[in-house]
Amino acid sequence: MKTLGRALFIATIAAAVASTQQGINAVRSARSSSKQTSTLPCDDVTKLDVRNLVIRTAQRTFAFHNGIAVNYDSLPPEQDSAHSQPDWKAEIEKDSVIQPAPSVVVRFLLIHDSHETGSGWRYYATGLRCSGGKPLEVFHRDGLSLRVDRLDSTTISIGLNVTPGEPIRKYWSYIWDPNTSKYVLSSTR
Image 1 (cartoon, one colour):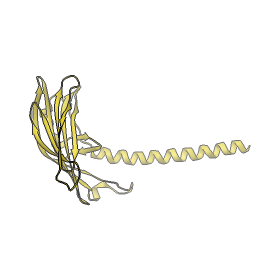
Image 2 (cartoon, helix red, strand yellow):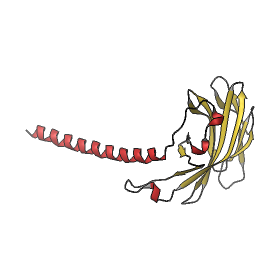
Image 3 (cartoon, helix red, strand yellow):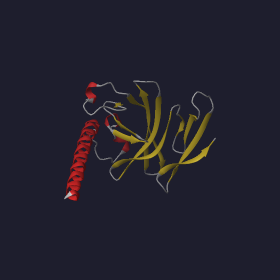
Image 4 (cartoon, rainbow, N blue to C red):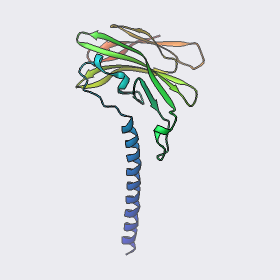
């Protein structure tokens, strides 16, 4: 009888934990789905409305609406994001299209993500192309002092201060790899 009682107690606790977890996930899902924008199939990357698109790069998701994407470090489940100041505000600073190979078109975005409730910022350079009806990231680099030094059909050159506050920059060059259909590192200095 004690064993049956323990089993019922454990089952009750497990059901309560599962129910609570489902409630938390529903709140998170509702919060993230409200930030999503509808996207059309990606057949031509040059026709994507990036000012009203959800872009995932690195560890970030940017849900752009009229060219602005906001993100929150954390919100209590009971707090609505519509009534809260965003922690981060992102804008697309550059939007370029290049053709690294015949029949390959890549759209490059330089996104500036500014910390509105603190100090700091981060730049995200991302390259997108259409594949299987969806936007596919074929290039990514991010950093605090990131600068795109060269962007053309042959090379992407990125400069970055490797130690914050010090003027020593490091440079990376990337080229299109037709075997992987992505940009790959070709050199550093």
